[in-house]
Length: 265
Image (cartoon, rainbow, N blue to C red; front, top):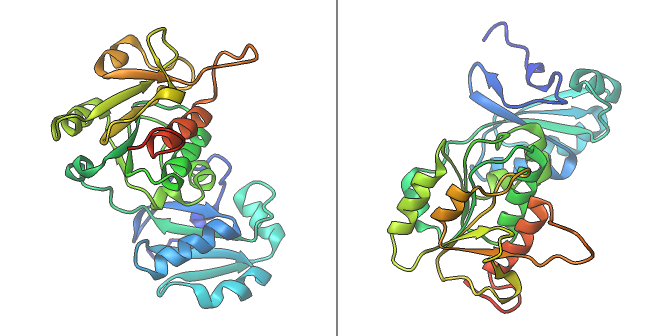
């Protein structure tokens, strides 16, 4: 601990994942005023452990009274923060927080509206899907291998959804999903897939307990995954387009899950 520099977590952030802190273990970085202020609110409420805040001198004066107890305030001029981060940094505020303990696997059974992401490759898509899931009131997200819930880019794009909605992580999410389905009769696992047998999403009426499965960006869900689902839904395309980005499609289908337009969970 004696050799630890409190500025270390903020170095070379362009492609940063999580960082290791000698006292607090695995931590992540949040950047930008809105995101950091939301994180500080969660810290003051006891939902998150905020280790430190790095701020420009002017931003520090505005944020000082909003720090959770025990949070260290680090200050520097904008040029110094940009040099530290490894890219031009104009947002004035960054924060380092402890990655919270994951939700217990058994709590997944209580989810009635669930987004399932067996595999993704892009942190921006993951962040956008988490943001939509939280904003639309889903009960949680079950995710397999991917870019990481706590990477800098995922955290930033999610706008704080990473600490607002339960995310269950599993190397093989299908095992947990099958347990979720078996926990209550009538549970429905629905694939988002542009297949010939897929139901038009405009006429989809989700079951009271439903899980929406979204495939990876390049190939979508494979045949083995589709076989594990009870049915498929698709968003009709126009203007010669063949598909939507997974994050855009997910937002539309999640809106339908929670009662947008005709359907309701």
